[in-house]
Length: 117
Image (tube, rainbow, N blue to C red; front, side, top):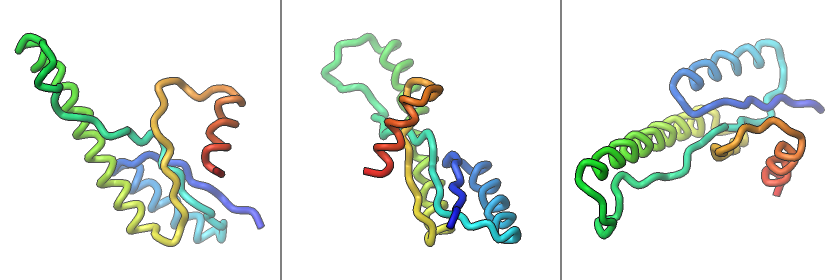
């Protein structure tokens, strides 16, 4: 039996699109085997260590970026939980965001090996 895997991103827009797409798959009787949540951010601190010697202006600028990133992680975690609760009968696999683009068979092969291990 053949199945379809949905690859998406944990955000509100992608969640809504996924709901609609899964409805179409059901209507067409196309089996959905699972969901891949792609480009999931790793947890991030909101502040720099206090012992780090850095001037106030630079600390503030860096911590603004850290806060933005931490907020992104929080938002993603919310949408990941929505995917899990809404599509709880489907296997869901989270794929961490990578710093490099995935554009070659070797990288895809490495990701595939991680997913099945």
